[in-house]
Image (cartoon, rainbow, N blue to C red):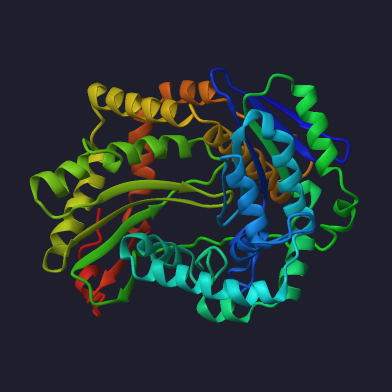
Length: 438
């Protein structure tokens, strides 16, 4: 892997892979829904959609999709709370065409008013899809519980009101402020035979004078203030056949070394079909079809949570089981056998993920963008850390001990840090308050 600054200061990552004939180009921008205010909530995600609606050379959606389908490419985009990415994966000989297309989308998206109006309906239906799927929506409810009515707590997609209200000027202003050279990373991963040739191609298509006009009114994300002193509960009333819950705690931010230990902790608790909560909730008690424990680490906050869909009349029992497992893992050391199994699970899954160029591109780009954000927000005088290779990451995983896991568990599994989000036919919070103890 090589990280290079181009002539215009654009960051380029090249990550060659052996044994593949494909290459992925990922353009990642360090902005997302945390960089919005209440009025333009959802503009990051909406703008991502508009990238595929036509640019200067490729005039419309059909022109873009036909070009990509014509070479058998995979292409898509994603928006999170702290970054937005646009990627194309193709056969290696089509690299220049892909760079031409992505740079046209990046610099020359038309943001046509008629297309904006049309896309509102698409995004409203995407919004409705999430609301109709409690298994997906419960995590949004959980984050809203943690961070409230702030950019960190609002859904990335926005609200129906903001989706319907955003106008072309809002897109243009956001585009010009956030999509600048200092906030953008281009990554090429896969069949790269000549790093210098790849660098020259990126220079050719991304060394645009348009960059000089952008970023002058950059909007920094709002600072997240965490000051939880008692357990918190948020209920969203909905008549469902299941009660969907997310029960978790605040944890560590992206630049905290303990976030990696938290990842291992989540795997042991509910990260696989042999994990403690999967076995206990599903296999032994028959209380859930899906159950998962996951961890999230943003640049300024983090959390661990367990989600499950359980019978409405047995939600109390499910909550008790989850909390019992939280207690056990903080009061007793994980056995050597269980720790080894969790490490081998993570290493195996990770190896499978890193076999493909799109995942490798995401791995390096995400690091670069988040590290850049941390430097910008916390200390501009520090130098960016070296990007961690997959092998280096696995070495860090191997160093984790049972004592490390117990230390983190004791730190995060405390009564005042408990948070319970519920979607179901419940209206009385008192039903759950008495249960939230570890």
